Figure 1 (cartoon, helix red, strand yellow):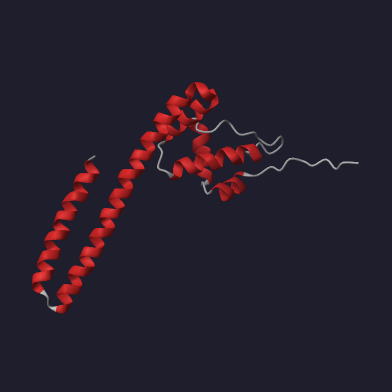
Figure 2: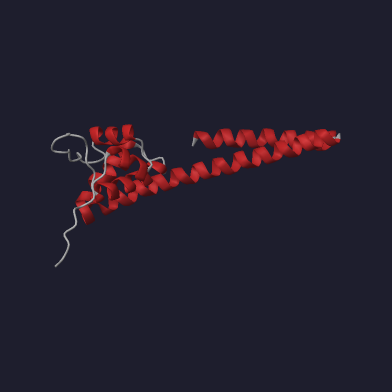
Length: 153
């Protein structure tokens, strides 16, 4: 005799907690078509998420965490439904996202370096080493320019 298990369902609060996406974001993603309409409870008419919904939401949460725009997420989801026919479009979309993340990583590295230089600068000031402080100030200024130029790309 096999026991029949009822599929697990989740409230919007549960889905938010499990995916890290606020309930307001879940509603928004549904309203703009990033995710398909969610089933509603028969009596309550509240959203009822199942395991498949959660899997899809986790994938969307990962895309959102990369900084992908809502429009790009919608395109990604739509392309995904086309399967192999949309592989080139998916590759292009993800390649663009990767390139943007590489720019952001360079910006973070530059900001990190800038903070290191400013720490060295203030240590030189504290030690009374004016010539070193002047060199570090110039280096920080050049790095600030580089960071500014990186943001324009």
